[in-house]
Image 1 (cartoon, rainbow, N blue to C red):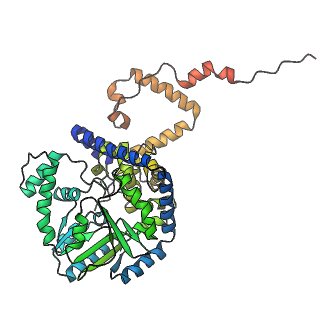
Image 2: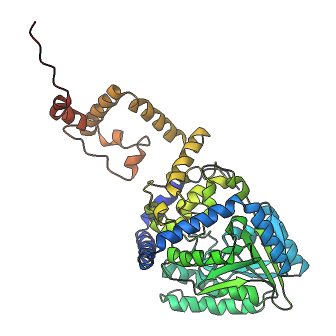
Length: 471
C-alpha cells in the first residue's frame, strides 16, 4: 500500500468531465437528501432524537471498555464466540482461522465497511476462500474490482448501462438491458445457488447492545438474513464503536438511521441476532483498527459517534460532484475526510480540503458530529505536520504575509486589478493559479471597497473636532 497522497482533485476532474454520470450522481444523492428532510419534518421530536442519540453515543464512548466487556460477557452467555482484533491484519487472521477450522471454502457476506477497511477479500483469496458479496451494490463493485463509492449505496455512481455491461461479462446477460428490475433479477438468480451451497456466512453489524449481548443488522434486501441463517457458520465483523448500552436505546437509533440515510421510515429488515441457530455456530469479531487511538484525539474522537447513514455525503456539494471513488479510500465524503487521515495521515492529507466548510454535513448528521469543524481542524494539523502540497503551502505562506500587512495588501489588490486588465491570458492562467484551472478569474473592478469607503464613509466616520474656546 502506497503512502502517496491521494490526488482527489485530479480524480474528481475525470468524474466531472463525464456529464451523464455527474448529473445522475448529483441528482440521485440530492433526492435522498430531500427525502431525509421530508421525514425530518414529519417527526416533531426530530431534534430531540438527535440530541438523545448524540448523548447516548458520547456516554458510551466515555465508558467504552466497560460496555465492551459487558457485551462480551452477555454474548458468551448467549453462546456466541467473541474475538478481539487490534487491526485489520489480526481481523483477517481470525476470520481465516475460523473458516479453516470449519473447512469452509465458500463465504457469502452482506455489506460490511469494516471488512473493506481491513482488505479482507484479497487476504482470504490467498487462503483459497471464495468470497461472494450478496448486497446488490457491493456485488456490482466487487465484479468491477472497485471500492464502494458510498457507505449506504456502494454503486450509486454507476448508470444502468454500466451495470448491464458488468453483468453481461460475468453473468452472460444481455449487455443492452436498461431495466433495473431485470438486472436485479439477474443478480438474484446468480446469487441464490451460491447462497444455498455456501460453507459460511458473514455480516456486519449496525449496532451492538451491551445489556443483552446481541447485535442488530439493518438491510433492505434481505441478503444479510440469508447470509446469517442459510449456512450453519455465521461470522459478524463489527467495529468497537458501534456499541449502545441498552436495548431501549435502539428505539432512538432505528428511528434515525434509515430516515437519515434514504428518507424511509425504517429499513425493510431490522434483525436482532441473539445467538447461534440450532446446530450452528456464531462468532463476533470486535475490531479496533485505530479506533482506540482516535478516541484519544481531543479534536476528532466524536467521529466515532458515526452510525454510517451517509447523510453527510448526500448533502455535500463536493462529494455529489466529485464521486466517491475520487477519495481513494473506503470511506468517502465528509465523514471519510475526517476518518481517513486517522488511518494514514499522509496518504489522505488532501481529503480535508475537499470541502467548502459550508456546515451542511453537520446540520444533517443524526448524531450531531461537528464534521465541518473537524475538517478545518484537520487542515491545521496537516499544516503543522507538513503534510500540505508544496505549491499550496507556499501560496498560503505568501498570502499570510500579505494579509498581515494592510498597506501591502491594498497595493497588491490594485496591482492585481491592473494585471487582470492588461496581462495576456497565458501569464494569468498557469500552474500557480489553481483557481483558474476550471474557472475564469474575477473581472477587474473600477473601484475597490477600500477606495469606496475612503471616499464615502471615512470622513463621516471621524468624530467632529471640538470647537475652539476663546481665551
